[in-house]
Amino acid sequence: MEFIHSVLQQDVAVAAGTVISEDLPVNPLSHILITLKYTRTDAAAAGEPTFAETLAFITRIEVLYKGSGIFSMSGADAVAAGLLVCGFESWGLNYLGTAVEECSFTFLVPLTRVLYSERECFPRSTRGELILQITYAAALTGATAVKAQIETVELPDAAPERYLRMTTLSLTPAVAGEHDVELPIGNPISELVLFGTTFPVGVADAATLGYLQILVDNHRVFYSHTNFETIHNMAGRMRCPPGYWMAHTHWLEALTSLTGVQFPGNHLLKQYVHLPFDINRDGRYILETAGKSDVVLRIGVDAGATTALRVIPCEIVPAAGGV
Figure 1 (cartoon, rainbow, N blue to C red):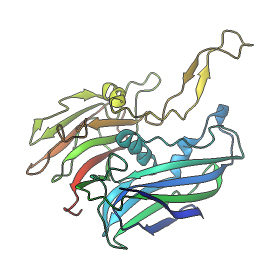
Figure 2 (figure 1 turned 180 degrees about the vertical axis):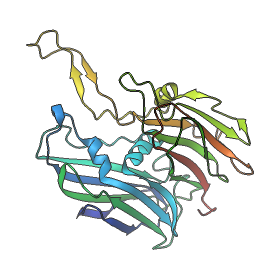
Figure 3 (figure 1 turned 60 degrees about the horizontal axis):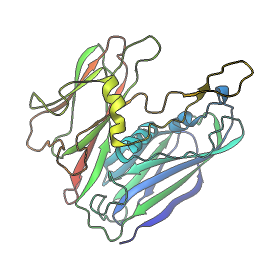
């Protein structure tokens, strides 16, 4: 066995508000790496690094097979999915929050839950069938001379049994209370990645994803009822890093002191929740949907938190089953 890590785009200038398309390799494909390199133009407040702004440079990443979505989500959601599903954390070059600083950040586009897996990756295709499409934001705020490096990892000897499909479902609830999101039926679902705009902060104890339930044909399964705080804090069960690219605060014993305890700021996954079923990646606890009439994620939206939410089901698709 071998893998082929190669370059699809080399330092191509990124223009705000554009959409680019690239044919992907025809060999079985494990994952794609999109690196944005740029010069930071503004110093961040209190020296705070600005990788949170970098996530907004990409408004949509899509992998299309014969026009159908295999992977479809925003750049920020792609970072969260990479962390939560694959345990991938970009090391983001240059954490300094100063102006005129060369920086880079890598977005992962996985077609498998386990990178480099010869059993779970996108199968061999024909040239032009598999396309990567990236939509860049209308304004690349805080950066200049943005360039893209796009690289792919192929597994030419792989004979995959399945691959990972992740596409986005969106909802903005009009009122507080319970809201149902219909999950796709037909393929097993390994896990869900969820984003909720509002989360508990300051003295406001309200979350868009206040509580969560899974129902299959009107019966609760797996997650009978779990609250935002608990399930958010349990994301560490998958041993994924939280993405602490924010600021930290020094506790000073005296105004002249430069030592003391360092408190980390909030992290990039503060608005995300991970709902795994297939904990051990062996199919034992996977959410089966074939033959079901109704598979629902029920969300209890707190009062004062009727803001946008997104749900990304992670479907495990048979390699011979198309899209």
